[in-house]
Picture 1 (spheres, rainbow, N blue to C red):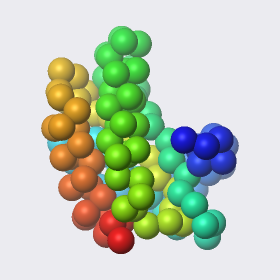
Picture 2 (picture 1 turned 180 degrees about the vertical axis):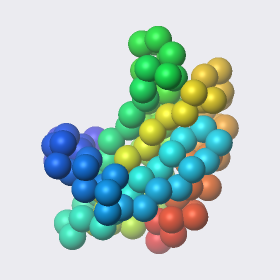
Picture 3 (picture 1 turned 120 degrees about the vertical axis):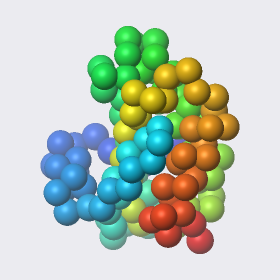
Picture 4 (picture 1 turned 90 degrees about the horizontal axis):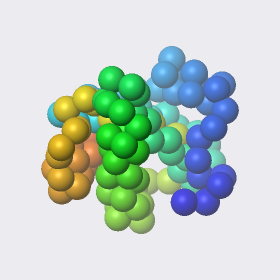
Amino acid sequence: MLKKEVLRRKDDFTAIYRKGRSIGERYIVFFYRKNDLSYNRTAFLASKKVGNSVERNRARRLMKENYRIWKGEIKEGYDMIFIARSTINGQKAFDVGKSMKRALHKAKMFQ
C-alpha cells in the first residue's frame, strides 16, 4: 500500500465517522465516504477490546491481506475504515474475507 493511500489525519477519521456511512458484519465494521480523489485511502483498526497486541496485529493483517486481493475490483475515490470486532479472534483469513466482501457488496463498492 502506498503512503498516500493510508488514512492518517484525525480530521479525515472524524469526517468519515460523522458524515460517512457504516456497515456492520460478523467480524468487522466498515465505514466509508466519498473523497473526490482518484484513489482510495484506507485504515485498518483493532481496538484493545479485540485482545492483546498479537491478536490486534493479526486482525489487522487479515483485513489488509483480504483488501489487497480485491483492491483492483473496488471503486476508486473513497475513504474506507475497516474496524475489527472482538469476534475476529481465532478466525481464518477466508472467514474474515467473506465478512469483508459482504460489507463491500452492501456498500456497492465493487465495479
